[in-house]
Image 1 (cartoon, rainbow, N blue to C red):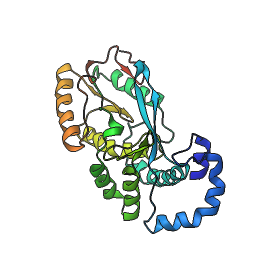
Image 2: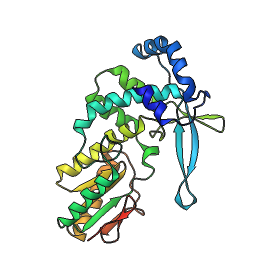
Image 3: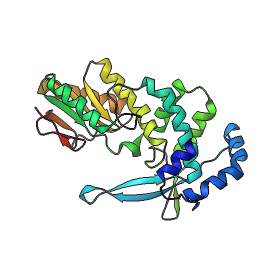
Image 4: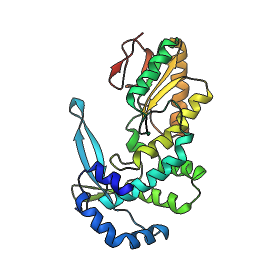
Length: 262
C-alpha cells in the first residue's frame, strides 16, 4: 500500500538518484534485507535533498526530498501512525487528515462566527516545520507508541540531515516538509495545542499550522493571545510570530485565502 501511494504521488528522486519508476524492481530484489534491518533496528535513512520552491512575495519555501525507498518506509510508518492517532485528534483539526479539507475548516470557522464569536487570534507559528523540537516530539510519541524501534526509526529520520548544494548539514530541529511523515508528525505535535484550547473551552479551527482561536470580545482576544503564546513557547518550544499574528475583529480577516463573513 505504501509503495502504491509513493508511486501515485510521483515526484523526483532523492540524493541517490533513484526515480519512482526504478523502485519496484529494487524493492523486489532487496525487500528481505530492508525488512530485516528495520526489524533489527539497524536501518539508516539517507539525508534528504534540499530544494527551494518559490512562494508569494518573492520568498521561498524549503522542501526536503527523501530517497524513494525512504519515502516508502516513511509512508508505511505514517499509515500505521494514522490508525493509532486519528481517534485522538481534535474534531476541529482539518489539515493532512483523511476525508477532511480546507473547505470544511472554513465552514466550521464560519459557524463559530455565526454563533457570536466576532473576534479572533489568527496564530502565525514562525517557521513551524523548521523549528519543531525533536525531544518534545519524541516524548509525545513515546506516550502512545510503545515499540522502541519505531520511535528510534522516526528519530533517525528527524536527524537524517540534508544535502544542500552537495554539502551535508545536520538537522537538529524541525520536520522536513516533503516527506510522507512530516504531516502526521506536525499534527501529533499540534494536538497538544488543540487539547489546551479544548481544556480552556475556546472555540478554534486548525488546518496544519494555521490556527484561528475565536473570542467574543477584543479584551478576551488579547488575554487569550498572551496566555496561549506562553503555552506554545513554554510547553511546546515553538515560536509565535507576534508581528504576523492577527488579534482583533474577524471582519475582513483572511483564513486559508478566504475572508470571513460577519
